[in-house]
Each structure stands twice: as C-alpha cells, then as structure tokens.
Length: 488
Figure 1 (cartoon, rainbow, N blue to C red):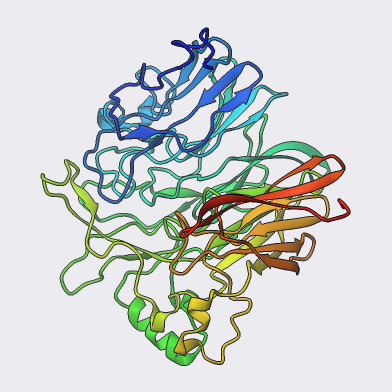
Figure 2: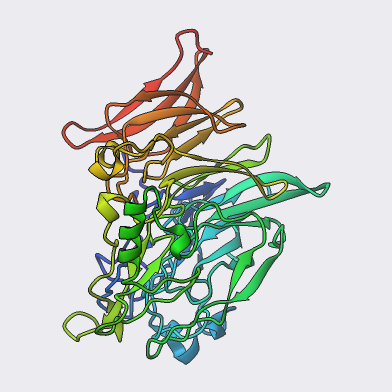
C-alpha cells in the first residue's frame, strides 16, 4: 500500500517543477540514491545523432525527504543566471540547452555527507554550435553537499563535449595511500578510456591532469575547446585515437583490407572532432573508443583492501559524420549524417586489432596498471569465419563489456550481453572466475542466457551466494544463484 503521508497519496510526480518538461524526453535509468533521510534523483534524457531540437529539458538533480516526499533542494546542472558556471555558456545558450543529466548512478559518502554526480553532455551529442563555451557542468564530476545541494567542488572531464563520451557509471569511492599519504579518493571511469582520480574531500586530482592542445573543428558555427584535460595517471585502459597502428593485423590479408577501409575516413588522435563529408573526400572521422565502447554503464569494481580498480572495456571504432540539418528533421544547424555508425569490417572481423574486449586492473595507490587481459576468447561468429582459419583467437576478447564483481580472493565476471554497447557479435553466456592478482582465468561455466547485469553477492545462513541476471531472447530474463555445496 502507498504511504499516504508521502507526496500526493504516496507518489511524487517527478515532472512537477521541471523547466521545459517534455514527455518522452526525460525519465530515469538508474535508481535513486538514498543517504540517511534524503532521496536524490537524477535524470536520463533523449539523445542521439540527430536531436529534433537544440532545446531540451535541463537535467536537474533533486533531493526529497524520504518520509514526506517534500522537495529539499535542486541542483541545476545547467546553471541559471547568477549561479556558478552560468558564464561558461555563451550567447545565452544556457537558457534553452537541455540534457546535461545524471543518467548513471550517483555515489555518496555518508560520513562526509557528499554526493558525486557523473554528469552527461548537453544537447546535442555531436554538435555544439548552438551552445558555445565550455558549458558547465556538462561531462563533469560534481561533488555536492547532500543536505543542501550546494556545490563543494567539480571537475570538467571534457570541455564542450561533441563526442558523446559521457561519464557513464557510478563513481568509485576508495581509500588509498599515495606516496605515503592516505587519501579518501573518488575514481571516475569514462567512455573514452581514462580513469580520473581525485581526493573526494577537496576535489584535487591525485595525479596531475594537464590541459593539452587538441584538433579543432572546421564545421561552421562549431567552437571546440583548444585544449582538453589529460590524466597523467593512470594510463588509458583502452586504445585511444586512430592510425595504421591500431588496425587489425592478424594476417597480411586482413590488414590490407583494414587499411583499405580506414583510408575512406579521417584518422587522428583522441578528441579529433567530427567532420562534414565532402564529395570525393573522407566519409567521416574514424573514432576510437566509440560512443558505446571504452567503459560504459557496467562501470568498474574496486577492491577496498588493496585499492585496485578493475574495469571492463570494449575496443570498437565508430564513424562520426555530420550533415546540415533540414527543417523537417531538426532546428539544429548540423546533425549526424549519412555514414555515421560502425565502419565496415575487414573480411568480417573487427577493423582494429585485438583484444576486442578486455579487463584492466589498476592500482589506485600508484596509478599503475597491474594487468590487462582479454575478457575471454573471441566469439564463435568471428572464430568461424574463413579469414580466421588457423588463427588463435583464444585471447582476442569478446566485444561486450565484462560485468565485474571483486571479492577478497577472486574477480567474478559476466561475459556481457552487448544489450546497449556491445560491438557486432558481442556478448555471451559465460561466467568466469579470475585470479584477481594476475588476471588468470581459474574457472568458467555457461549460463542459461547472456549476462545482463553485474554479479551480486550476499551471505545467508552460512553460505555465500553469487547472483547473476541473465537474458535469453527465447525464454526471457531470469536470476541465476550460485554457491558451493560446503558454503565456502
């Protein structure tokens, strides 16, 4: 039964109080975060390569009293006039731009009373000509006081983002010791393959994050940031940028075909901006990681005893191609054009070299990689291709992000379903147990379906259980619980 004293007869309508609210444009993809007597709610907003409009709902973050449903505070991820960060939106673009929501889970340090918000990009994902400026708090990690909603600190991970490289997962809170100093840290994995690490009390980077010059856009109206922040540690956990060096070179024939395909596109380092293809010219920008690769909503697992962070990722390129918008499609100047999406695959195999799915262990005390391993063999769809005959693809990786659970002794992984962010043929029903110190596979078993959520664990009546959510297109979704007969 609904609690009648909460909200309106047990319900709080999250559309109430929203500016420029549009049904079908805003909702939730993550559960609320509860800290003591406060419920904090983010928002997920419609995106894509071709937004219908440069305007959308702003992705405000709000807090409610857990007992009464009363609104306690609102944090504007797109600042209003007079608020900090408003001046980073030029030409009054904060007045109409939307998105900039927190669609991934929000993390909290109950002892400090702080929230950590992974904020997405503003409208639109690939063209920012209608929102000049760096646009706080787009693609930022923001720390708030849970009681007041006041900003404690923030760090913009990407300035004026036009690559859809949102921070896609809950920030990881971990206590570490760096150069003999104990630090309460927060680590944010991001789609383009970096881990950004901060003192979660002060917001100071644990290791320097430096601004470096990046390529600039030539699309009319676009004003890209001249620099972007690059963490000096940890090193990237996946391939970044495109060149001949990253192409699939498993055989001379595959490499030749990969070169032929790549020659159609503009290649370049991380943060190479999208282009408008011209007749007889490049068909788009070959981008790596893709908008759905690197790390994604599956996030990272962190060992509180060792300070080692484990993150799964996919190495999967993408083509960014823009085109002038027509009034019947969008009021933006440019939207995603013909040819945007995944590039052709050489002889049926991925365009880039393996592993196509990987797990990386990173010591957050030192910022160094402990190990990087493929998340298993390549899927049968690749191994059975004529071009793969005679190739050992046992450590080529599955192009779906591994879903991770770390315990005192082991790292457990689901192979991943590729539901949202897998590359072609990604995902599988295999559940694996890794030695968390070395990355060696100790055990694997088949599940009745593809893993569709991170493994969970609990202890009950002398036994430790692991539970996985699986999905099977013919039999539906189910939960699978595992334990040892002796309870160990």
